[in-house]
Image (cartoon, rainbow, N blue to C red; front, top):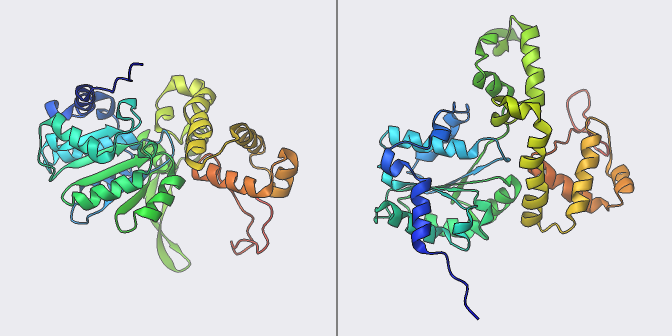
Length: 339
């Protein structure tokens, strides 16, 4: 019987060179270069170039909110500011099948071979979709300890699982950064509707406070409705084709991948059909009051399992629980209903 042929190392090096065009051109891929940065870039980038604190930076957030774009824009900023030579910046997509069963340290070694920069000091290494590497937190912790003069940045779509493992194994080694879906302020900024709002200082309970105000509430409300329908994902707000069939985009690119791949693989969920059915039931009851008791009786799933499903779905940014509050804004002591 013939043995399986291993993926040649030359092929992996060739792929790394393709993924890192700035080694030759000093520019990131054109796909990312023309995109306007999210406002979160101003908060994220200082964490990227911070090298005095010996920690890895873990970028967490749901699918399709711009994590890969944010990382590529950070790479271009590092090049423009001449913080390090472009040949000492590497981007590695862990989801790529060519890197299957490769540890982070081995990938770092291959990146150095691919860029012909043997010295491991002074690098910036970006690992995308790191949750697909088993025990990634242990690999990353070892890298931080072994290469204190190199900055490691990792991203992943499963925020809850990443945060759990980050807290367990990365205490004192990882800095977490959460990138949520677009806020309304980011939406109007990216769409260049900034002229609709202004920052104004007003008296509030005897103290000066800054508030956003508008002289065109009807126009602003129109854009707010569009944001509610399409605005959580940067890709959607700029593509007319996606907006015309947004249900298919959301279902195929976000919901199905989270329900059928991310959550089962990360949390060990065996009954995917049960999870999918439960999510569908919640989606059809959006905005209605419900309880675990009613959900359990309708779905024939026990309450403890439902609690876990709700926790997983909320961690994946597919749902958001809204609890009842009293006149002072406090939660009820015995809270059994939520939306």
